[in-house]
Image 1: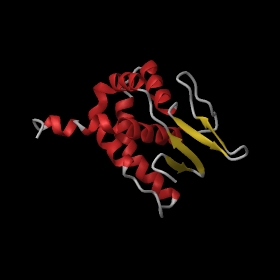
Image 2: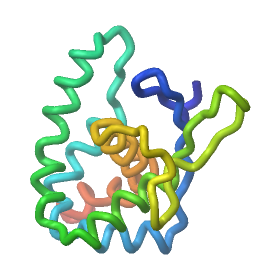
Image 3: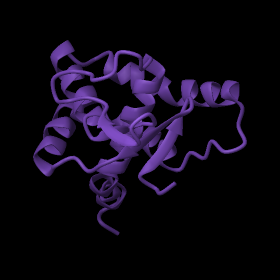
Image 4: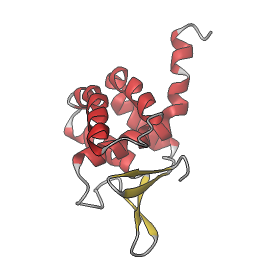
Length: 147
């Protein structure tokens, strides 16, 4: 697997880049809650689930998702949909029967009704870290006077 590919619950996923304009709108909606989300995104990007049981993975993600869920609860329904669908629209799921990839979501609708909420949030978290890491890499430098 490449850095773009990951597996959750036996399903293979592939991350793609979100265009800068959509990234802008996602960040704009998340602006008020980014303090809760950035540390979690950094942990998700470096998370290595190899050798972990499903229960350990679930416990780890539950700890990581608590601050995200707290932040997300502050968003309006429309903003939450824009963020979640915007992030998930950059992810593809492998279709083993045809050996093709299909988008998990469009900007308006989830394409697969059989994806559980924990899986969907993990997908969104990984898409967030993959797409916005460059943007947030500057944040610590700026907060310390650029040094």
